[in-house]
Image 1 (cartoon, rainbow, N blue to C red):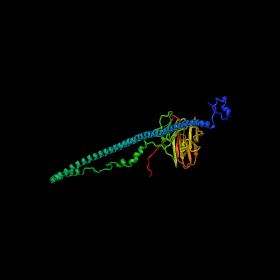
Image 2 (cartoon, rainbow, N blue to C red; image 1 turned 180 degrees about the vertical axis):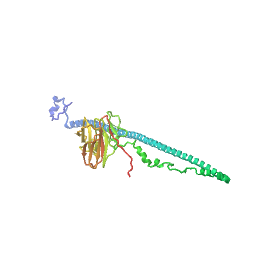
Image 3 (cartoon, rainbow, N blue to C red; image 1 turned 90 degrees about the horizontal axis):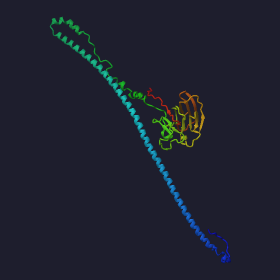
Image 4 (tube, rainbow, N blue to C red; image 1 turned 120 degrees about the vertical axis):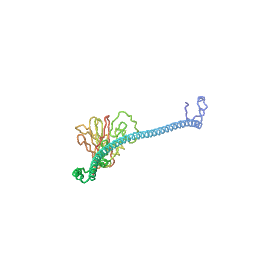
Length: 386
């Protein structure tokens, strides 16, 4: 590369043989040449920058396209899963209604059979009574014929047979009356029919005060078809969509209904689960679950061989329990500001949280064990309050 010397040059040096290998020119000419060179270099840099900008724009457009494709894919997955949910729910509805239809069909058959049996019994009674009346009528007809014959006899014969005739007319005839109980006991068969059928229906009806919301269930949780039990599965094989309602961190699930007043309780069979927690969570704490606060969740649980209680996922205080918990009750007293935990089997109070509730509160369940947690159904009854 040639060196550029910006120094004044005298006339002798300019014409001297000693400097014949030096290229010298005016400052103006050198400046123009160098400017032209820089402009060419600058143009090349601008072209290169333009190429980089074009590549970046292409990458940005590709990234935006990928994002759109991903969002479209998520929407497709959600739509597909919603259709799958609808089909599964439809199957369950049909199965349940089919069971109820079968129950009603069996009940109808049994009641109509009982009605027919009573009808046949009454028919037999009426038939027997009819035969008795017919027999009496025949006897009476014979007596009438005999008396009429005697009345046609001569006086001597009539008087001679008079005593025998009187004795025959004085023979004992039963006074045939229609007795009670001959008609169908309609009231027994149709009186309060729906009420009586409903009472029998209780034997096959299961009612749980809380059912699980599958849309909030962590992908590793497997829920039962009737939404009353949950267990942890070690493989992500359910292909659940990443909908906003779903838990992603802790393997948790919510109850399907929130409460903003009143008294509510539900019993959970924890069985042999090695890592579980049950309680309640406020709606705001649930929505902000990715950034958990220090309040909004109240629970009792078991993990690493110890029982504990807490008011947020990160804080767990040891709970001293003398006997193994197998069934636990969560009782929410919303108006009184209490969450009460009880060992159902031993009827022992475990802990009471106090808080002034100002929003909806949802049942909360956590399980990280292959052994299920199960919400226990309660007994129901049909009764008439008079």
